[in-house]
Amino acid sequence: MTGDDPDPLKDALDLQNRVRSLRALLELQRWQIEVLNDRLYSSDAGGVAAKRLLALKRSETESLQAPRAVNDP
Image 1 (cartoon, rainbow, N blue to C red):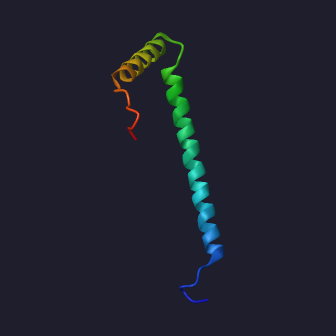
Image 2: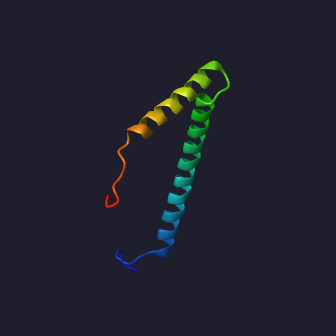
Image 3: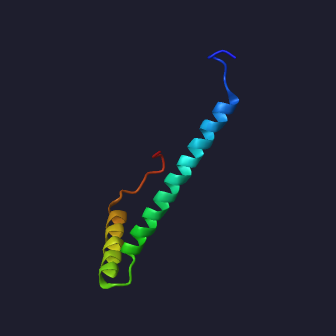
């Protein structure tokens, strides 16, 4: 084989490493989301206040969005 020939084994190993890295990143992001949810939706007074504030902000942004016309993309 010359240097220009595709190497299926090397490609498979590279893909396996990418998948492993993406799974690790996904696990990290899942953990981060769990931590944020625990902080945001905790049962103590601060968590309840944060939950109410988030709901208020969401309702404000929903009411401020302009309606889309029929021909809008």
